[in-house]
Length: 584
Image (cartoon, rainbow, N blue to C red; front, side, top):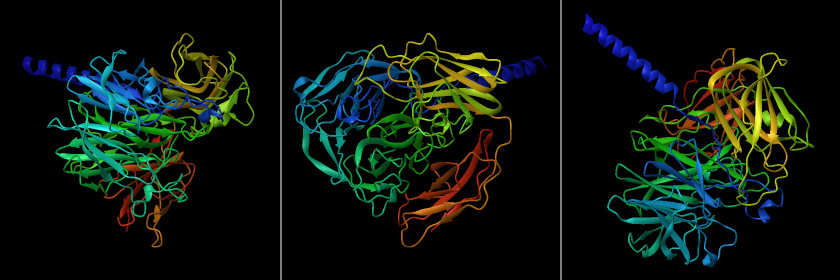
């Protein structure tokens, strides 16, 4: 009996420890909270100075993640994929003949104990850099004059030690591939054509905000290569970084230089809806637990077409070797990994948006930058106060007393004065909470913060109960106090929506790349998530729709059948999904 009791005690203790570990998983929220630099180009800032980066690459090196992206005058590294450390570094040399760019669309490569990095160039005089200690600015030239001359490069080392580079960014030319010598980094043989777009067949490859503007040919860019179970996955971005449908597609082959076959599930990275849209030109990598993730570009494109941010999502390869990325609720809080896990199962925390289009009060309003722009779930719109003064504030009403788990604060660049990368940049504020709108207490105190937090994300140590939140500005680094999103996440006190009724998918014979989706409005829904795919068990892509009961979808392959499901959501949770609807 003593043995049984002891074993039961051990079992209870292990279960408690497991539950505790689960509770302690870190969470994150897209767009990533990085100290993004401002555009270094005066011509790009004529409509207003603003933060900008894109074209990320993520690399696991010596147990740490390294993130490089366009024109940041440095890069980031992290131990946990949540807290990022910036290393200031200028990689472009005076003789590189680059006007303003500082590692545009960079590529990285791990060779043994060395990390290599290079930016985009068509010249033959660019430097390929190397470091064995990249947590510091400790780099030297691996090749003073890298002769490949690649724009939007992606580099890959095969298991046999041979090294390859892929590149291209054009709406008329293909992506190219070429082998390079592992020791001298000289090109081996001529570059070879790898893949091209085929928008006549693949609807998502058409240019335009909704893949519907054919005045411009689509762009193929942003090469990346992974190898999985002997297959080579050549990835690319299309059709244009400015559009919400900007995604990443993939071709699969048996050799690093092809030939390649278009994966039927494409794009594999796609996020056309939600607060921040777009999931193109990125990288797929495995974390230290062996879990795959995909990082890519998210768009704003208001002050300039190239006003962009970065996000990442769980990814992986299914049992059939299909590469996928799960962007459903992709700008809501998600769990990070603390062990091996199945990314076909969602990492979504289940914390819902609590203040979408709810009542807002503010201290002042600049022009037409109205208060409700801060809660409309659209990063392209924002509220701005008249000043950056200490004491400017915004108050949001959740409508009822709710449980708050996390808050994301997305600052907007109104009348910013910075160009490039600046030091000494920081934000300070306090968020107060209230049950009745009369009695207030501090919920988040960043009055002594000295960090640059343009997309500050705070998971509360203990969930809080409140109906009202009030954010009070204390310090802005530049420009006015402006917010594109004060986003409150948690659970309301009411009922989640019922299952959606009468999902209809209309796909005509005249244009089989397009479909019109409609469904019966759900009176208790804030919005809907539509899932689709090329098989009923591969509904890997999704679209998030707020406040409407229809969606025009122009991203299908002309010759494939498609399968759809839909679910409704509100601040209280998510409904059950509908039955799968097939369209031929």
